[in-house]
Image (cartoon, rainbow, N blue to C red; front, side):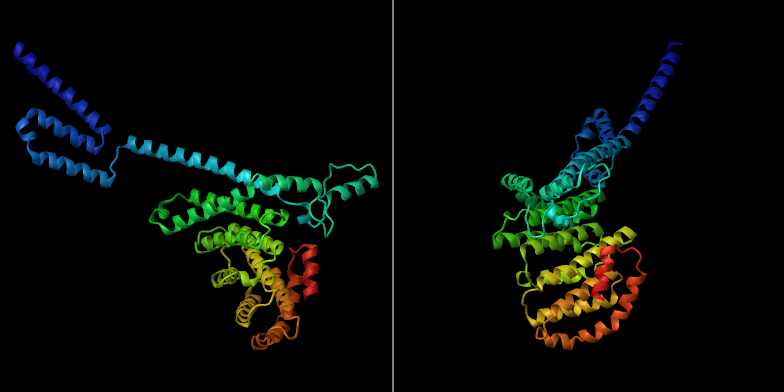
Length: 401
């Protein structure tokens, strides 16, 4: 009886041990199982365990498992949790940064940039016409005036805090980060949310830089420093236009900032190189849009590119450059789906060749006059058929036609 009892106890113990080992194996990673079995065999047969071949085999198994990245479900769950936490922390930080830049963009927007128009506000109640005149006299910019005293004080404080330079540095750093991601193998594995938020920060920086250049006339007013503002925006644009995943809102925002800088700092075509000119011409055919909103953003990018070329070509430039720009504008004039873009192209070309002696050879060789005559009837008809034009846009287009 004692012998039978001992046998039964040993069987129970063995079954219990097997069940425990099975439960343990389910929780262990493959590497831990291999290591445990090796240690078990080592305890039962020290001579075999001392064999160097076994140790080498275990090391090879470890290396192979490391390469395969074999983890238990618990380990994978922990890794996913760490990843989610990292993304959440990144998103929170970037959200705060974007909001800060948006506030700064609004703060650096002068009333003079609103063309002296007061926005309607139903909550304002004026007691008399004199009060209205006093409000206009103290807050609204005249056509040829700079910022009012309150704005001037604010802009001086912003400039003295070196905030504009920090925004410029942030823009440069974001551009460099995107360049690195685009050019490195790791970029393919970078979460989409990272790119989206970098694009957003870049756009906000561009808008803020555009406002600061237009409102803060003492900031980087010397010629070399002034040109560097546009250089920073062009470098940012050069980076994102090469990537097919760039949202249309990014290119439209950066191009809008480039227009603001070029107008306020009188940038001419001589101050951009061949690569920069090729970038501006490529924006004329930019149409990375899938939705109606993206289509409007892409259309604005093309419109801004035409405006930029018009600003830069207002000064004397070579016939070779003129021929290149003229040819590109005429192609876009015949093919662009936006009546606003077509109207701006007509406007730029008419200004460019307003002087009979200005680039006469290019004007003749490109057949500018005949192309004007052929497109104007269609252009007038398109103005009538376009229903989403603002009153000012419609008046402007009819004047061009």
